[in-house]
Image (cartoon, rainbow, N blue to C red; front, top):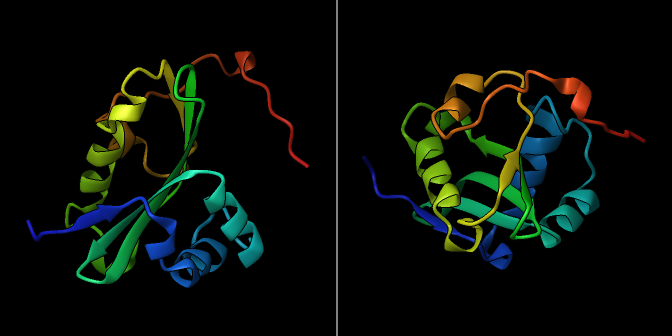
Length: 135
């Protein structure tokens, strides 16, 4: 596999790329404003995958480092899909020392269940135990 690298330094990340992908290409964040993307990045652990100096993927994690972590905004740009970049990113995130002891992880996906199952995620069989509020 080609050598990729991951950075958690948001100053190194291509905010325009992240905003463009989320607001125009993703199904979950269509129309999200750039200021919202920046604020969400500033309040999360962000992960950017690079091929050289070009950012090719992204994910962010919100956690209390003990009880729960929520994985969001995971993407790999189209030219790099099916090249192991998603696995490289998830392996990195799930082996991060700071979250090794976190009790539970959550995420939402419409089309990548098979991918996340490989990392121990499963579909919730009792959704009545979960609640949400959407503004």
